Length: 127
Image (cartoon, rainbow, N blue to C red; front, side, top):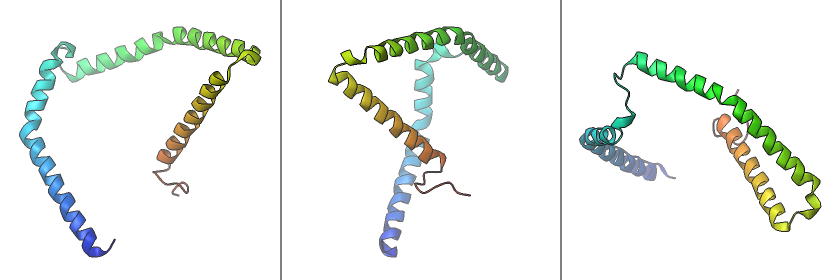
C-alpha cells in the first residue's frame, strides 16, 4: 500500500473506532442492566470479593471431586478403542474416513495452538 492509501485507511478506522466507542458509551449501561436483570438468579448475594473467593474454592474442589468419575470414563473409552482396534477388519470405509478426518482436525488445532503460542508467527519463536 502506498502511504496515502494507508493514511486514508487509518482515518477510516479511527472514525469507526470513534463510532463504536460512542455506541458503547450510550448503550453500554442499558446492556449491563438488561444482562443483570436476565441473569439475576445467578448472582450470589452479597456480591463481595470474599464471596467470589469462596465460590472459586467451591468450583476448584468440585472439579477435583469429579476426577475419579472422569478417570473411570477415560478407561471405559480406552477399552472401547481397544475393542475397535481388535476388530479393525470389520470397520467400514466410512468409519475409517471419519477417524482420519478427526485426526487431521486434531493435528490442525495443534498447529493453530503452536502458531498462537509463538505469537502468531509462522517461522519460529521470537528470542
